[in-house]
Length: 384
Image (cartoon, rainbow, N blue to C red; front, side):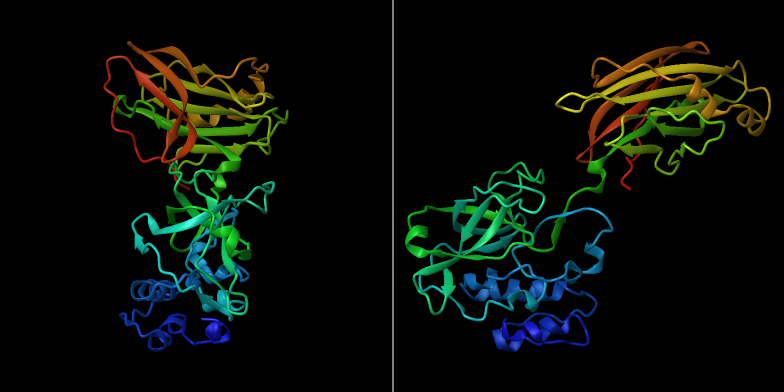
């Protein structure tokens, strides 16, 4: 692998295909799979050889080698797979050879690489550039120093918020392997763990933002959601809407920075030849150790009946002006749920906003529920 680290090929897949004869393995040629070809090559090598030196590589290459589809515009790499994306990762592994002993077998599973390794906890302080929690000691070492072993840096995926299993790990990003004395490693007991197989793990971009999603709003009753506007708290008093943000109508959601003091939103609903109202939402970040959010809901009835064309009615309702008029006082207590009721024709409408876990992402969910109406199945939550 180290010999091939400086080799260049015209097609991405050929960096793997040209090595099949050297490693005496075979696999189908699938042009178009990109960097996945080199991962498949390593998986085939694992099936025929017991050699931990396959995992002795360094993350000293650009992340674009993982493939352009795995390089988001935002976010931070939390960890990478145990398999290298390209031979260049083995550039400094030229003199590493496997030890003679062969212990428990290892194999790729649907949880990652199942392998028995000696683990040593990493006790250095963690920061933005240092998230690994353990050293995994491999059964290989430098050829000219048989009394040592190679240890690769691992991050416990439960510590990264990526798994609830204590035995799941990934390779720590941007960290090189180290050399440890084998006499010290031998005293550690071997344990079964699962190592994330390939590609990087990215932090969620949405972690730095709050999100509010409009889920249910009485569509069965003919209620229409026309427009919405929101701005960060405290609101800037202006005669125009320059300080406001337009609602994401495709996902029926709004997002705001967790670093701000909060957000205010105004949502305009109406029913043809029926009542029209504006729902006012307040989210204020409380300065307590948990950085909780205070929630409040108000309803402002803007017209008794929509007995004129919708376009004309929409033009008369200035949501920014309504937000300016409704400047709230700060909340003293954090709420995980806020509820208010409102008379709607011959029914009672309940406006409820609640923090929920949707597809592993915490967000505020807004529902407008009506007495005597069965709640329909929710639409898919926003993923953008």
